[in-house]
Every structure is written in C-alpha cells, then in structure tokens.
Length: 98
Image 1: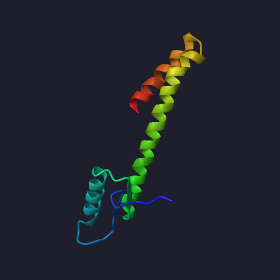
Image 2: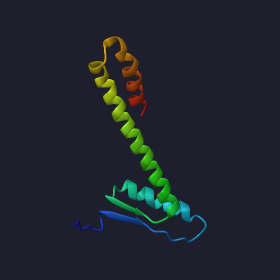
Image 3: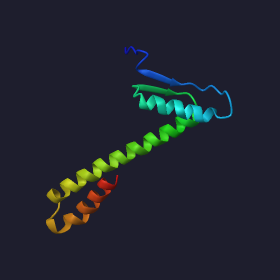
C-alpha cells in the first residue's frame, strides 16, 4: 500500500465560478506541472481528455523513435551491405524526426 503526502498529489477541481472557468482549469494544470507534482488528478473532463490524447501521442512518438533507431542500428548487421541502406537511412531519419 502506498501512502501519499500532500506534496505528492495535486487535484485540479472542477468548480465553475465565472465565465473563464476553463482558463482557470488550464492555469491550475500548468501550475501543477511546473511544480512537478508526482500525481495530478484532473477533474474537468475536457482538459482530462485532451491531456490523455497528448500523452498518447507522446508515447507513440517515443516508441516510434526507439524502434526506428534500433532498426537503423541493427539493419546493417542483418542485411547485406548493398540493401541495408534502403532501410537503415529512412529508419534513422524517422527516428530523428520523432
């Protein structure tokens, strides 16, 4: 069982008070990220969904970069030299782009 202190967790509460509540939610999330809390709970659905999508995109880019970089490094060992650059160079470019 994990015990959390108040400095480990931050909750972005969904409290609507005024016209710019969405901006307030975004500001609170940004402040929590800058404070580097270990866990951030996002109650507003819209911001939570958007954050989840960005995390998914980041994970996909990271996995693509790692797999393409590995392919770039190990293709010359697995294929003949005449053909390896057709796979190795594009994989390397893709890895750097990601």
